[in-house]
Length: 149
Image (cartoon, rainbow, N blue to C red; front, side, top):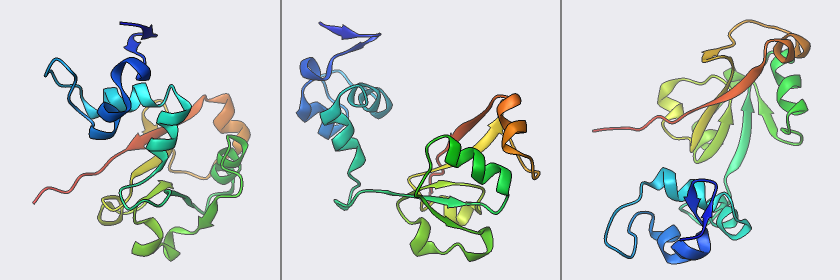
């Protein structure tokens, strides 16, 4: 099987597998994370990943009021993204969106994923400058909250 890095190519796996999410031709199982990794390597896979369950593209929303963190996010590609302060966030705003910023768990469960600016694995909580974040190798850390009933 042709490999890209350590993963077989999307052409060999097949688009149907990518849409279904788990089964391979031999009856074994792939995890959804593995399939997403394969799909993200190809333009057509990225196009499929960009579509949400409802057929609408997901939105990016910055929920932040610290100027240094907002500047850091914009410097790293979040230009033109809707910004709101944490006090103004609503259910309809974060539903099925990629949220960049700290929001309550009751709202984070509605998002596709929540991203926080972190140094190592510790989210940045204080108001710091963009330069300070760059000097300390800040990065985005993704959190996915699932609801179990």
